[in-house]
Length: 259
Length: 344
Image (cartoon, rainbow over all chains, first blue to last red):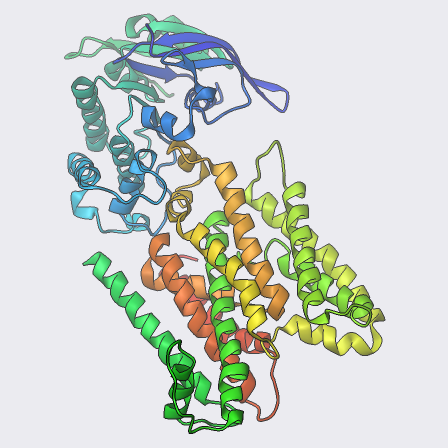
């Protein structure tokens, strides 16, 4: 049975359709990429899948139950979202922000326990921000703030992790670190990962399946080899990619040529 | 280490508050020595019987005149600052204060209307002004909530603008009332400047339930206030019912301010300055922020009221004048400091 199922999802803003009749399924442990040009509806789609957008047509089922029927905290124990914008520039410390990830597991006014603190410390160490734990978030760079968001999602202990452009502000070293870490987390805990990516090469290397969105509709849904295809990409992105094969991973990669 | 520091701060501030109460009791048009002041207080404790060596007049000054006023200032100071913390936390706007949803102008309109049309006709005039001022404040809040509602969601900017509109409209009606008020104009203006004079124990008893319930409600929502700092979208993803909690916290904050304003009139700047100042000391964590702001707000208003009744001999100054007098330069200082740090 699929873990997450999107059924005939449509969404319009001010009568302008953003998504129209989207249906697909994601199974547990999968690494699912959502790609597409600017304005194709990627962020809206994950907004609906995470239960943030409520006024949508169609249904999103999580473990067979409509996402709108979950209690908010219950849903947050199943799905964590790392937003594109990262953690805003606030004066809370890194550790305080990461600790907020425990919120869905705590009762109102309940304090963090030994176990919570252990999880928080683990996440800080894994993502290499332990040294910065007492620093206010507003003294960190955009990339470091992205890591803080990811650490917060880790301590949330979700079954599904949704990443919206997780690598936007990261240098290549941290990009690889984040991706490797997500992979490891996936192997250890059977996590399901849904990520929106602009970087098609990163998507090709890190996803089992890809969904290519265009004008709010599914253009192609399939394996990396099926989607990262010269003809399809040229159609959607209006630019001609040069296709090569990744020498180690043996997945299709693209080069761009700007004249 | 972290918890101990908060405890230390709390204990220190409680001690300071206690000392302030004693000192303020001694100061006034009649100066009373510290031993007499303490003896009169102790004599009012249950199961204590002392042979009074003080006059009935001294007892009246301490117990019936100064003490209720001091306790009232402590409660009102706490209510306004804790409400300010809630407003700034929810709206994430540095200019947010307890009056931003039109509470003060709604209450002022109610008070002015009462002074103008009802005061001579109703028997319970001591309570009609607070009651109708409170109704005015609650009506303003209701109007803001209706005006800012879009499919049961309310954006922060929309809420603030709805507050501005409400204030402008009740401000216009208030000005109209003042213009036609004639000899009652003086009383209306003085009400609007705020005062803790001529209050008694009953006013305190009226405020205490609002104070306790409101403050406790905000205390137990410190986590929600913290989450909102991440932005509403993140707070939703973390499992917080943002729309509902936001409205509840704003309503509780408004009711706190509305009940205080109804009794003592409009005292500005406390709910704006104290939260800002405390945030600089404690950082943004609302667990500390709410607690410390309550205590500092109390101490601040206690001393400003003591100034209001003593600074000009044999004359009461409106307390709102003094809070603004201290508050505005202090706010300017915070602003410059913030600008130098590159935030703000």
